[in-house]
Image (cartoon, rainbow, N blue to C red; front, top):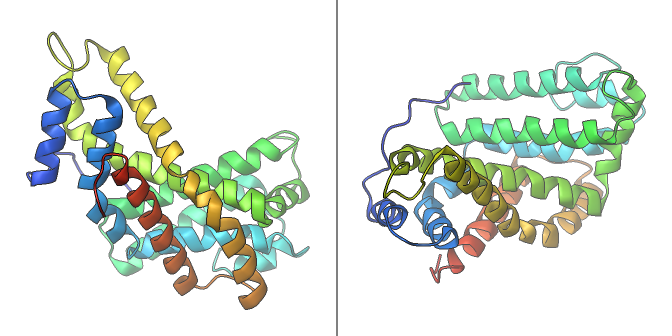
Length: 260
């Protein structure tokens, strides 16, 4: 799933304001808040994207599936094409294939769905890999136990936060990258590539701070939904994803006094 070619920032009032801020002395926090305000519609529309919904469903369902000793069967019940005792790379490949299948079937051309798929596989890979005794020495049972450890309230809250922080940062970068490279040089916002890269890091830090609200509700919601329903339907995933994005957008925007 490749990006479409980036053009210039959209010529809407909100993005024109972002471009003006980037060309002026505004601090990064102000630019980020204005960017989030400008990207609000895209972020909230992502909650209707089939790939986003499936990414959220798998994000929630894979840890719960790992509670079962027959992990392979549990994963196949989630529509993942995988063998009985998957290693981490098998799991990541199955998730990527499933998300690509959903994209193709729905004919979704939304790049935000692609960003959600990327965030899902990245967070799943990093979180499980960090818990393994070694990437090349880990057994399928090590992988299952690492995934299972994410299925409790506190770990799943942190894991969900990583996903949404990555998605928001990538979404902001997706739009901002259309303009930022024009701001490198003498008398520009960035005096060189190093300053431009520092701005990218600030974008991720900003998204991370704004995603902290996810930890406040996701763990409790996860445990309650799993206990009540025994799993996570696409409808539940869509609802969770929408509420999470709405909370993040509200937090980002209110930093600059916008009312969303």
